[in-house]
Length: 393
Image 1 (cartoon, rainbow, N blue to C red):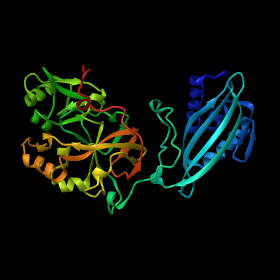
Image 2: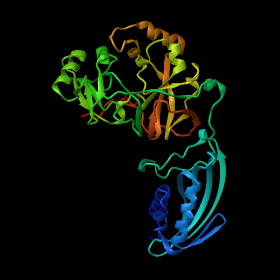
Image 3: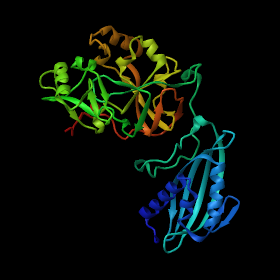
Image 4: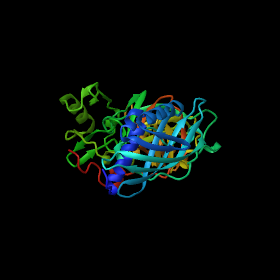
């Protein structure tokens, strides 16, 4: 309630964003005085029933509406806001609407006056960047002023539309991956990815030095917990399989901190590069495989992002490969020529270190497009910062 300080003004703006993203006219109207006055573009509205009527018509017209608001300024009982929202019309055309609004509140914190000016800009679906309500950890970032265009020059996209052709999760780090048809991307990568790892007396053990681990099957049980060759990860049977592969002091441990990832929390491979690689894509241990990408595209992608479904995936860098690529994931046999080929054909770098900018669901078959971004990952993996599993339990 008034008088506002910066924290309470920001909270008021975020509450308004959440209410409008619900697309519930009654919820939005309820925070206004019964006789609240609005000017919305050229429409003049007064009272809660009129607000409900106006918003009902608005969201019947503006489909798949998604909004971001940002605090601009405030006084004791007034707040100025910048906002942007995206929507599509009945013909399928997408729009981004840019606006500013001024709010005035009564002593109880109800909005008594709202004046809003809005401009609509047509955009291509590939230019979208407001993809549904944002989670709490993404509240209150600055709003970019201009449209960020899609990046689709010929050198980066093939003749066929780019799309997701395979998905994997690795419930136990360095053990086999499980193929997925659908994956939930969280701010921490694929849900359930690498939440258990193998440890020895001196720290983590991985497929780099314990090659047989790479051949041990792992999956996710109906309870959402990792399983090793069908056994619960913390069972004696799972422990014995890991000791057979990694040595008598090996044990399984749970840890879900960001250090569990080598570099970033997602690895993306592309079909053109994999075809030139000429070996089983599973040797690269990606989370996503994209089809429709020419074989020399990956070095051009860092500092851009991939829009897939309602998720946005940042591209950080091209992955420097290691000896794990030389191990056959089925037999455990080593072929050093695989690594030599990566060094000669790709300069030692293959597939893309990525991270999740905006969580969402992705599925095999989903279209993908490359878009601009100025985001950078908040965390890098433990092998980069020099503290793998620093707090593991």
